[in-house]
Length: 129
Image 1 (cartoon, rainbow, N blue to C red):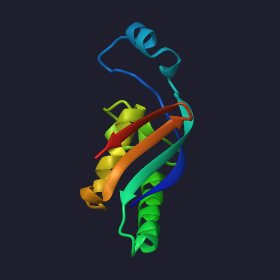
Image 2: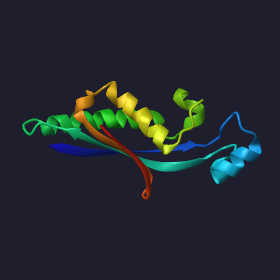
Image 3: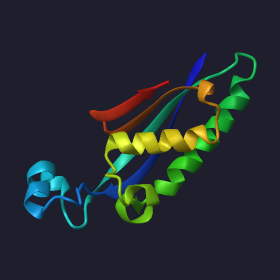
Image 4: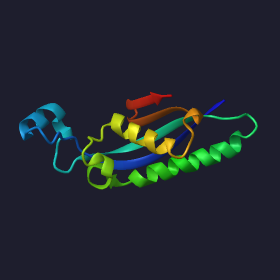
């Protein structure tokens, strides 16, 4: 059985490649390249493999883990506050990889089916394990 859980959070970010000049950054990233950035209401979704006889307990545990992960990023500017994004551009893909690394430190890899991060309803990235 796979249970799917979600945890929302809001965060700001900007895209910039430090080794490029302003012109190349603007040309590549468009409106996503600004001094202050912009924000999204993200949704982190995760699928977990569960045992039929204990899925309710597992569900509560996994939901708590997801909520704790997203709470760290909630209402933060990712580029300025989260150490991993001071040098790594916080794209949807990189944020999802960040969550996967953090999740694996709290849950066994074989318990995770997939991780999906929605930046918008029609923009997301998914990692299947």
